[in-house]
Length: 291
Length: 321
Image 1: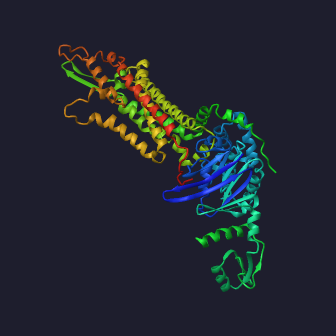
Image 2: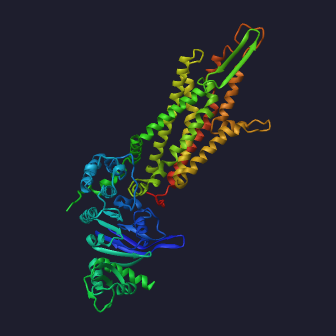
Image 3: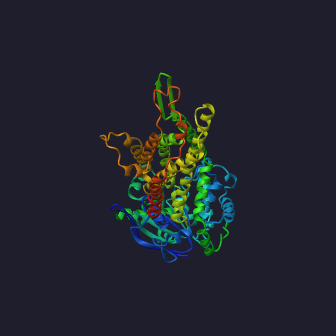
């Protein structure tokens, strides 16, 4: 089970949405992060054979997906950022429909649908029309359909967008539980989602890969570069203009700032433990400065 | 920690996936349509419209004659063989031709508009099974409408016969033969053409529908009434045009020649229109149109085959939910 990406690129007109991306993925969870427009969705859509690469290759178990897309699709579970439903169906019918499209025999599909409904906690509403589903329930239905064929490659694009905090945590836990013996690729711009579950982190920006690392490594590289200081409003504004700020909280005794800087930004600043969000800001901020 | 039980060994799964994908697509598309209340309401509305159209056209040709013995009038029954030949292209087929592109053009494009396309195209479902499965359901639906039209002809013909003693009962054999020759090729051609264009140009599905209707209107309604400077339409056109207008014109002339009312003044006591009932129910000779109709049906299916081959799984999805 291996997904190999070599020099992958996609151009829209004269604009490259993604360029020269190379990755090799084995079982485990890979978190794909980057700001909006970084090329995450373009990459995902090329991986799931919905978009043709302009250059480069994607190989699944050694086979080029351009020529052997069906081999990848047989092993694939995909949750797109947005997906449509058939309003005529109930949740259970919708899953059985997709199970049939994935080629599951009738008896197995029936059993499998029951399993995934239980897994995503939708059994109670499974026989209701899809038009009555909330955003969270619809999203859980999305992950349920992606798991129907027990995929070796699970690709989820911004899965927690629109979920409330409790649903988001539940969803992350569910994803984390699925990483055994499969490749899970999670694309998001919510760093907290990746921090909680991914063992590998790929950062994209403006269509290029900034980093292919682990959360631990990027945190280690950020250590000593995150500072906390409480100051007055005017100084806070000055610091904000000069340094990257990851948090700004107005308090009775002043403004608490969390700053990212290689050196001490203020005499009263103290080093604090970096979060993955700080590390991400440092990585993407450097790029912005150099650009 | 939640875990998923393995589905089945991969090789076994792959064999299963290729077992009956076409039937799976058809069965589920049919189930989806069946679950929709709109499908049933549309079918009922179409049936009622067909009934109404046949009732309106119950006497498409009217004849009158007066002499010393009195005045005589007669009309060709709309559901007789002659009457059907006359009313089919404009009264019955044209409404069907308006409906069919709306049923067919979105067979695949609907998924793209609803954004269900991404879920389907990332499954192992073969492209040919997806496209042909959707088309065959569209075709079955269209044929269902055609059958509703046949039922409406027979039902309304019988109803008028029961309420108006002079109106002849529809002859099932002739009605079915004319219906089959005129409707079935039209259904296969229009559904195939609309489906193929809608599949290859899903973002322009509305344009496809309008284009199909305009094309049919021009061929079936506008062209036959255009001034031709005294020239008749060429015989090849009357045989090969797909809307059946040429067939109706040719066979209508045959009926008119076969039936010559006796307008002699001396025959004052007899009805000059006697014998009309016999002629109007006569089975027309449909054989000359068999080959052209088979050609158009084949073209409809060939276009679907082209769409199945040219269909792209890679597609930009419009930004709508």
